[in-house]
Length: 131
Image (cartoon, rainbow, N blue to C red; front, side, top):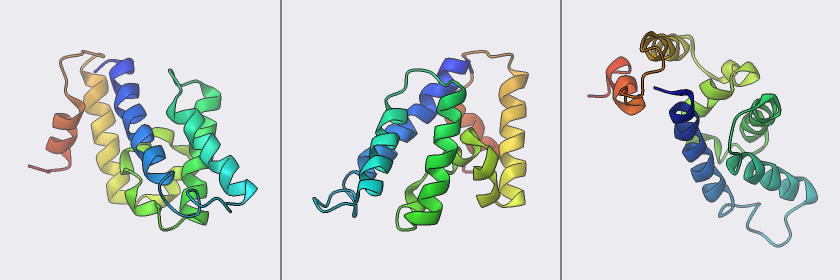
């Protein structure tokens, strides 16, 4: 799987997360606080990013951690792939066995030498025994 395919997979997850959040309280309320409005704007910014740079990763970590700590009603819809993708503090919200599975997934993807022939969803399903 190429780096761009890997990014694109997670980019779609971010876009879906943004779309979900903008329809939820407190974000869809005209009385939303400035903090909530700024949070949604930050999520929109990273969901529109075209490539991952250092700032993107830092912002992503901050956003995921803020969802867990401030918007618990949204946490269940955050795809676990995003916790792994952003890493850092986000990893504290993952169980050890889950971390081990994602590590296996990363190793399998790296073994492919960046080959585009690997389907991320298929490899993940195999490792996570989703079949």
